[in-house]
Length: 320
Image 1 (cartoon, rainbow, N blue to C red):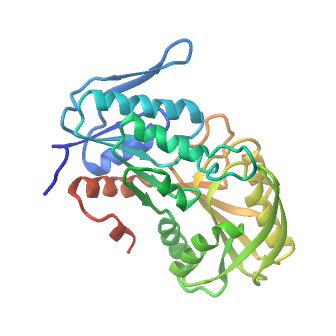
Image 2 (cartoon, rainbow, N blue to C red):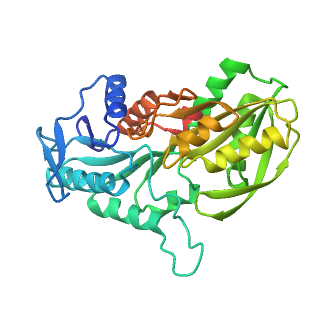
């Protein structure tokens, strides 16, 4: 028995309209009629042009650059739907910003990921649908239900078609110790061995590679990470795998392509042959094109998850 809204309605903010339209195409529905604009002083304004009373509303909004503007859009949209008597409101956040601020690394640090979780729940969201949080424990920051999608199986399918499963010349590599569990599962799907790049981070967005745990000599390496921001860590790892480890060629993949700062310049200059990203974040408009970057869509995966949430069907079975 479905104990919630009478129909699915999908709306989108300004962060990733192409993904929202793709989700609607897979659902066989049209994107909800709403507009998100800004006053001259930067205040966010939301206008909803169709009734949502009693509906199961899904708001698609990645909190990517500009992070604060997109977060505020999400909060105001949730509030608008709540005040319009939506039956249930699900915040669909393909990329959850502030996820890297998930703990107190030093005295007097904020835990901003928890603050953002509180803001979203307080605004009126009933549940969250997101993908590849930077730290799994962020799921516990929310006091409302959260469904956590994984992107690794999309990469596994891509590289299985490219190199085959169980290829002894291929090795999956974690770019840091924090991604070991993610890469272990990825390597299991591809039926390959894995290695780890051990590094020491001096300060934010800068790292120094120290050691490679595992033998990658002569191997085709696939680096897997949850996000690529300035690309410093990824490119340093790729360079070390070639110069210190003797890897034959380097491929990389990541769920979220933040691509800020000198990311494109670093990727172009790195030994990475191809970088595969998911479209949780659109390619930055202020960055030059990069021939090394390819995108896979997550629209079908989010559409299936939305349909399962509405029908009260398990989402975990999507990854079996």
